[in-house]
Amino acid sequence: MTVGLLQDSNFVLEFFYGQRDRFNKEFQMQATYAAYVASDLYNAGNSCDGHPFFAESFYVVIENVRGTRFRHVASFRSTQRLICEETGEAYFNNLHQEASDKAERLAARVNDAFASGKGIDWAYWVEIDPAYGSEEYQSQGIEAQRAHADCYAA
Image 1 (cartoon, helix red, strand yellow):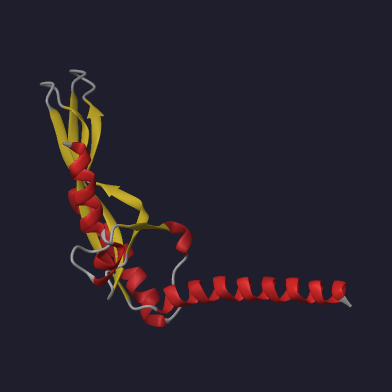
Image 2 (tube, helix red, strand yellow):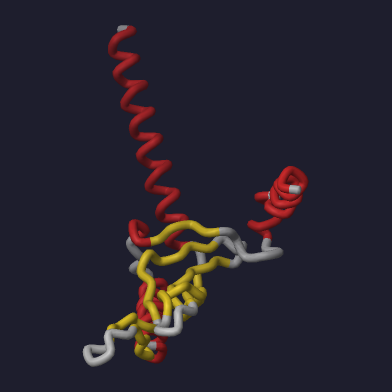
């Protein structure tokens, strides 16, 4: 009887944890998220005069009302380093509008997926710091963590 009880309890535990994981994913999918485009600067390389050339990289972020944020793994760079065939010098072409448009299209697709109830594939999303001052930011104690880190950095 004990063996049967243990087998049943293992089944219950497997069922419970499986349901918990499914619930967590469904909860994340059903939470109200909004997608928007963000950007960061990056060093695209050195120009012909040796100075660094900084450009913009666009990406999509989703954020819920608590301030929890996830970043899509795809990023869209606003320039490309090319070499002039005649002189051999480096130059950078302007892909700013194309990169921005790609990111905007991805954000629109994500918002449409949330609006239709389909959800998204979480394999392409990475959690990032919560929005500054948000409920999630405060609950994680990020301000205290940074102050503590600053004490030891000096």
